[in-house]
Image (tube, rainbow, N blue to C red):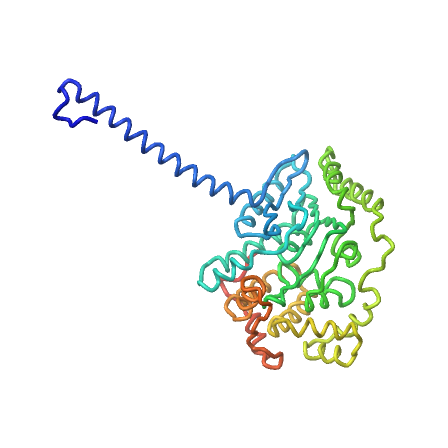
Length: 397
């Protein structure tokens, strides 16, 4: 622009006005760009989970395929209010949850973020577990039929958003495990409720060893309610969405039809069938020391293999997990989640969880240095401290 002294007086207001418009436009452009960036950041976060109404159903799609659909705090905070809305909505008659990418339904909670927050004393480690467990409880008490398509890896937090629903559909690519004792945690998200209710001592075995169940075995173990060939999963979903005003019975009929037609591994015995008697006797002790002694005395190749796995786990985690399952076997789900919230917060304040996350997920050296490193050094008093009430900070459901 010209220096103002060189401009005729009569033209000055117009030029000042033009400068003002340009300045305003420049400001507005910047504002729009910043707003767009903020929105795209929000949109990216929102796209971690898709919440859509399709036909008669509310459909939850976990959408972090590159990260195996691991559950973030943001996802939990979006799913819960939408679930409650759909539960109240007379037009929504069914809720479906699934994962994208084909590899995983949900490989667990984002424990790395939780560990980083916990070490920095941030509130996330309190809020994440609190909100996650509230969501688990909401799924269990949901008055609308809830169908989880647990195709691919289903572990930890992924188990929490599926196993408490009415219907869980596994495929030949489903991999179920609760491997938390390997990262200094415990099988949470209501594991203390559903694991001890599996046949015999199967749940205790799965919780303490982190053993993986695959494909039809997830159904045979009683974790999935139905089994469907993965190539039929899309058609199954379409048939569920096409139902006009489905009742729980209509949905069960559709699932049963698909289940009955599935031939994959139909005649294969349950992978642990030949070991169930051993599992029931060896894992029926009330202390970890006794379970280890049972396995040592048994000496079979199966027992030796389980010992090898258990010896890699956090001694503290093993002891709190065994007690969690024993106590959980006679508690309601709400009581179990309250207990597990106490355990989660004690783990955040301890050593092993952060060390387990470092060894398994960050440095990936798979060599955690547990403290204490030996079961004998984990005293009853240590274990009791994990179960102590948090007073006004206890989980309220």
